[in-house]
Length: 295
Image (cartoon, rainbow, N blue to C red; front, side):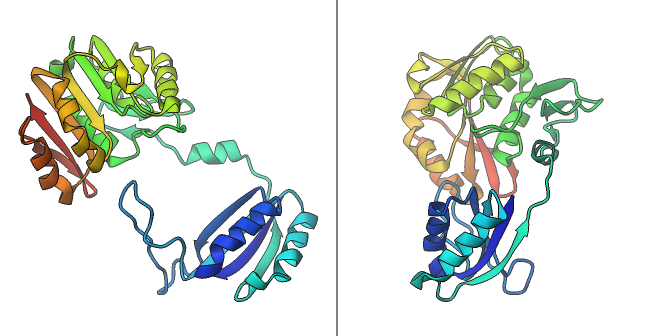
């Protein structure tokens, strides 16, 4: 395989990427051409929201082609276009053959939740101190244990194992099913895991089977009645909208556990849930917080 490397100003990145796609590029990636320099720009958007700008002031556009000939042909075609003004060819080079599966796997290490509770990809051996293990590989659905919101929810589950043992649990917005599986590993007797995304439901079912636990995964309509524990790792805006629904599923004396909330959003979440329960800050990590309540 060969990669075609281009430099483009901000206003040319989108049309250049579309043209490369039309020229049968296998993939197109865009990076800050000034990364690791004083001119480097950070493009941060709110979680779940688009970034403030689509690209950097000066971007490095890299397209992958099946061979040298199509890469050079694409470069020649692009150079002849009016929209290529301001862009430049940075080079064409062969991509070394690599074991891409092994390379990808090497980027995912076991994730520690507590000293004895770990998330471990299937290609790794669990650490010797691990007593409770969730086997989970990266997939399409959110939730591998690498994000602070997931870790905080799992830490809460581990710390409240006695409260979960034998109880009924709802994982609302289950993603990969990791929280439902964590609850099952800590003794929950009946677990419903629901999500609006059909691929998340399927991922949850498969991940539960791989971990030897039983959960009921399905669309939100699957959630019926009251639960002793309601888990919701989503984002602040949908959590506010879902306040009546989530609290309506909470059994008397039950626990509501929510993540996907930034520290600055704590007050608005507390206000949204005030008619139903009193939310408290229970954990924080990297600007994210965990909020909990008792019915």
